[in-house]
Amino acid sequence: MHQTFDAALGINLLHANQTGADHNRAHFDAWGITCFNIMSSPGAGKTALLEKTLAALRSKLKIAVIEGDMTTELDADRLRQYGVPVIAINTGRSCHLDSKMVAGGIHRLEHEYDPTSFDVVLVENVGNLVCPAEFEVGEHVKVALLSVTEGEDKPLKYPIMFQEADCLLITKLDLAPYVDVDVSRIEANVRQMNPHVTILPISAKTGEGLEAWYAWVQAQVAQLAKAIAD
Image (cartoon, rainbow, N blue to C red):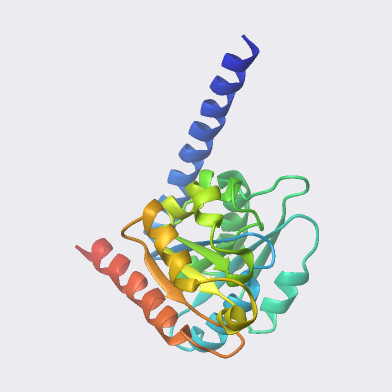
């Protein structure tokens, strides 16, 4: 009985969250915004990636950030230095952002700025390889990061994240020569989970692969803009 109740509760929670995510996405669509959900385990390099992305693309795209963290605004403060709106959401004990939390961020964006002036909202999710992949927030695009320091087996051990991703960034590529990891094996394991995902090996430290990432982001924005226009 207890097991059945837990299963039903989980389904109800996911259904309620999905309804909220669809509502958030409708707002983004109406405003012409492409929303990216950036997910990874702690320390894989999400904030470093966003720093590089804001520096490179803020002159080409109007960008806002919704920054999820359990307790602090340390990462949000790092991103505010790039002169873009950064809305911080502290999740407390929750290991992921959900659609209701992001709806709060959307309302702040709507009240403090003209949302129709933005091209992109980057959502930096809480560091976790499990829960963020199951709770949509209204994104159009899911981006997963996996550091070379995490090893080759993570796509097999945490499959949902990699099955759901539209793009996988293999990060900290500059460290690959110093750790016992085969980047091609990471890619092969990811392909087992998701044959069609875009895989981009990058290093935020050296800049390797970042131009391909910037081009991919801009292509997603152009693709959505065309879909809305059609």
